[in-house]
Image 1 (cartoon, rainbow, N blue to C red):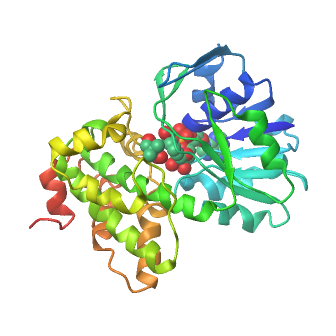
Image 2 (tube, helix red, strand yellow; image 1 turned 120 degrees about the horizontal axis):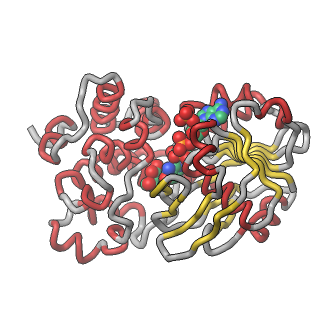
Length: 337
Ligand SMILES: NC(=O)C1=CN([C@@H]2O[C@H](COP(=O)(O)OP(=O)(O)OC[C@H]3O[C@@H](n4cnc5c(N)ncnc54)[C@H](OP(=O)(O)O)[C@@H]3O)[C@@H](O)[C@H]2O)C=CC1
Ligand SMILES: CC(C)(CO)C(=O)C(=O)O
């Protein structure tokens, strides 16, 4: 099977590195500035101490179109904000047999690709773990979880799973991708809190004020899912519906009970923090924005998500400086007055 990873950044670089490590025929397409850091040999590591590399990648920068040929499996790892352009760009990589895998957070990214490639298999992928580039050329997976592919009828996904499952990147598949995406979105509601707080995820979770904001965001999503009849699978050690209760515990109790929520590398930051800190537009429309869109269409309350989206837009436009204290964020989210 020939694989192409399109949009090789943190997730695409790690994924492409694992595929290369497993001796799969893999090309990585991305920005010249990113790929040049990995050219001498990409190293992979994870929070459990697994390592690979230096890996000699097949990388293609801005001139990739000159040698582009269709592939069997096309992994799209650009941000949601780049998918519309990507849908146009990838045409030379796609023929009738190409399976396109959308690896974005949030809800709805695959719809854009399906609209342009209606005859192809377009499947969703849920990425549970965090990846950071610790030093140039070293990608590190900082948290747990299995990369989960949406099952297909042909059995190709099952074959991929058995081919690619490994310590560096445990992998699985599911036929219930929609509930899984909503469950992942519940966790990603913390991305905006993290970006606005401008501190690592671990420090954010250690402060009850930030947890109260996150719990309120989750309450709105949980109500929405209940009304929609979406039964959320469990992604953490406690069921999805218990998470707001756990988050609202006092600091001491939370620290003791939620050890695994805190068992993440102390430097981990969310993908939205990276976007905001680099002056890029965020994926907020596909995350909290998706909750708002569907909640409003059902007449449900989503005012905390609305307040947080407004704050992220202000930060994107440079009208708000991230680094809000927990108390300030609670005030701005309308949780305390
Ligand atoms: N990072 C993480 O830990 C996690 C991320 N995710 C999700 O995974 C998805 C990917 O995130 P992440 O890997 O962090 O994103 P990155 O921004 O690190 O990687 C995407 C890369 O694609 C590049 N790119 C965009 N458009 C093109 C194009 N047309 N041609 C070539 N390259 C292009 C971007 O360049 P440029 O920036 O210059 O536009 C960037 O280098 C997101 O939906 C994210 O929410 C999920 C779980 C964890
Ligand atoms: C894994 C997690 C929740 C945090 O890194 C993430 O999905 C992100 O950063 O977007």
